[in-house]
Length: 375
Image (tube, rainbow, N blue to C red; front, side, top):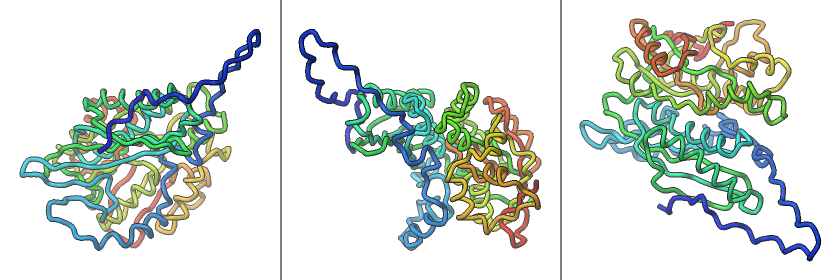
């Protein structure tokens, strides 16, 4: 493992001194962080269909009995049993800038990476930083602010950044390797939903639409504050939810959108998931932005990858479909629980400040269509 990336990356050589009596040259203006990336946040993910093809050959690799969760159900993290009381959760996540503020970019990326540990029902124990920066384009101060943002989130989670790796990259990239612990009996996979379960979503949707508006300079200060508040909120309810006997499955909604991650639950459990679209919470203003055509390219790629498995109600508008497939960066937990556990699930969310958490659907016995969306 390489040493942790230092915020004090060597500065670029100083500019030549100005001639005596001449004005000093103006400091170079740095580009917007989002202008350096071809796609931001979890919208950078490889399209679902392409990813399935890429990973097809890896399913035949040998699997030790201690590996409780691997790649077979497209779950949020790997889980390896250490002993009767502990299992290690291992995951990584990194991406290009979704916002222009360097500190906020670091915070969002770190929150998103740690979310996968919470989504397995565990608690993070440490992180390693993954850093790729165009050092000839960005100042050391800007790069340091990205790292400081990530470190601030890890401090909030009560864990250290214990190392990492950094490279000189054409595009700005930041993220974490995140490790956590969970009791083997409290691991909550995305594939263990049961017919009769209700689905609860912990955060509202619309981050992808807001990021598209930001890149086009169409997001106001209130919208930006709302976007930062949701993407930097750690999914800390995960362990408490996993401790509830009536919670059968957990995942988090990220780059494949609500539809994509609901489909992963349906495929893994060999059930049909029915989403109640009017009940799905949305960030304020995103429906209007989507109606104006302000959406990400990733939402269309998501639909192209899995739309053939989705049954939509008649007259489902294109803007609504874009929100259904909208890539969420640091999105909310999606919980599959028996109806008797619903009050306890919502109480966990409310107690930890997730006021928007809501029932958004149900799990049914398989009936031919993996995902049905009721408008």
